[in-house]
Image (cartoon, rainbow, N blue to C red):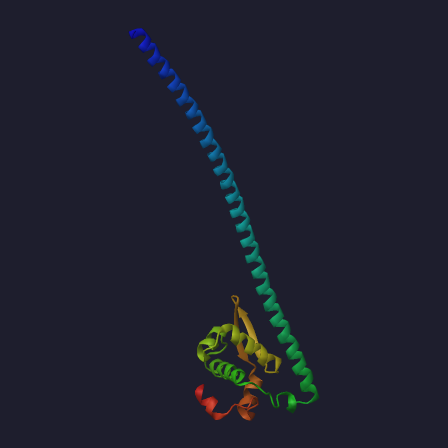
Length: 191
């Protein structure tokens, strides 16, 4: 009887070992499948990261090119305005700058540029925006409006920074004839 019990126990042990081996193989297969899936996901993430990086570099390159185009467009606009002013001057010297009508905000931007440039030389959009409490974007728009209305603003680019100044002849005419019709109360705020 002892022999029977041992053989039964021995048989159970081998069945249990087989079951454990089968379970072990199944677990290894399941973990290998999971590992393969994780590696596929990791590969996809790496591909996406590379694609995102390439897109970011492409967008930075486009942004740089747009900035350069904006500078060239500003230069062309100034050149065209200067040609138009020179042509107009040939026809009627006195009327070139008569009655330049500006909004209140345009007058503020003009006065800030006029007074600051007189003291320090060419001024940046940022300096004007700090002086009058507008955003740089708004100051850019107002400066563009001033140029479109015939005020000869000179733009210079130094290290990708725009510096603004007012043409000296116009500055003298403004001082003598108040061409943009600045009233005293507004002028006092900028002195």
